[in-house]
Length: 68
Ligand SMILES: [Cu+2]
Image 1 (cartoon, protein in one colour):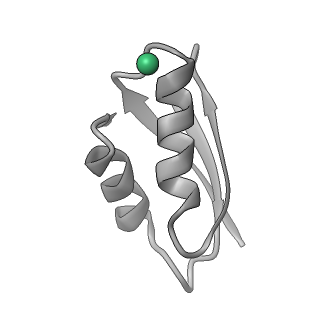
Image 2 (cartoon, protein in one colour):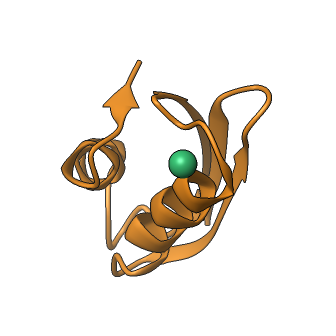
């Protein structure tokens, strides 16, 4: 299991938090995703054999948020 923290722009409310977490958690290989709205970051635990950091970033931007 690997862990990473990605800075995410454009999250303003609890709905955004849920949307980003859901977009990540539906990816194969993601075990947990937790947004810190105040810090504008998401902490992700994932299986690097199933998904890579580029895939995580793409899921966030596909959900309509900015990956910084
Ligand atoms: Cu929102």
